[in-house]
Image (cartoon, rainbow, N blue to C red; front, top):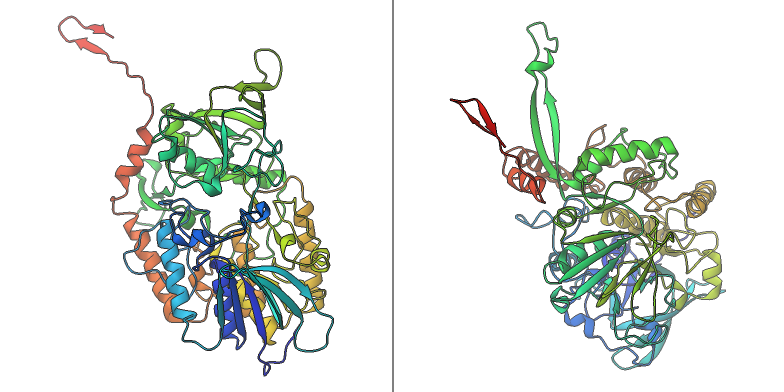
Length: 597
């Protein structure tokens, strides 16, 4: 597919000014196209807008409950840090400032995205248009042979006026973080501001992780956290700083990895003939690295394709074993325990404190699924373990507040026309992979010059940047994709959606996926660094500026050296000894040889 002549200036609507919307607009401009960016908030940043930001106060229809959670900002609480390092949380051509924290806070991520916007999407540039506080309400495909393919309608939230305009292309960059997904006993459109869908009891109050701002409102209260995701574990750890009681209700058991992982390598001495000496002469070197620099190392030379999209039981067991090696016995001896079924795909959450807090009994662990709340306000848990009365339903009483960390569902049906929705095979109830797209980006046979950027869950920024490059390349005609390639990619998308059992993420093979996108866009030109087995994969290697790639490689080497200098060892040791211990003391009297215990 090559949908546009390079000498035509195509106007493209970009819906959303978060991470994916900004990078999409930047690469549309680079491709010689003219983007118009629609954003409901007052500022850029999307989900990375701090919850305390004034951007959250953009006006909305007070009587429209359906759009209460459609606001893109404020999904992260103040002070939250990323679960992957700055080496993965960056765009390829925009480095972090020197001295930046290895794991940025939400405020630092917002500053990074703002600086990226200022550099590439400055108001002085004539190549694009920013429409802030403008919410897209409808996108429909036009039956026309002209350069305009789509009609976009939107509401100006400041003036409460409706507008419409035709565009040559559309990039949907609203991502997954749109509408909260609630436990199954609550209505799909549950609104905690009202009493619709809930029984009449004074407590517990119910909220969603998307509205969590700090632990202070829960001081001296009993709080239940529902979910087994990164946000569930991190919010539980944060709430425990002020709450009187914290109960973590986990429907599944993830491997809980720390942000910093020690890697132990044996350095075996060799004799004069070069043979490895006996094991008694082995020394070990310890390198403490950010978790993503350990997880995202090549197992094959570039390109590591085809992308793995299905895990058989043997592959699942191998992945479980690798994850267990990073955790050690710490999780096994915690109230959380280890996953029981290693024949199914593993799930991962990243938290530095959760396991320690469970071991210290500051967080209670309950294995099961929240299935309801009775008339007395007691939580009803479908437990995997049989209760004393012989049933599989247990009750938790005296809970003041329930925080649901149960994820999000997309809201594409709120602004895409039924025709487009049907072409995408869209399922609004599917929180795993709600639509069928080639490479999660294109559906060119049915929707020419429409692309999606950021409809992806996983290590985000390197993937969405390549999606943006591919979308812009297809729209300006510089990227040509065969019908066979598109057909195969759509079938892979369908197979991912219907696979059982499902992995944690649709594209769990991050390296295979990013290499697939890179080969599609660059052919075999890039990356030229870190292409061998064992090399770390970073977004900065997937672009044409060799100076940036070389600098990134030097930063990576410095990070490895810093991981060996011992400065990170105290925190690792402290984490390993936290918890309750029992000590036994033996005193031997040398004169009598009597031993006291």
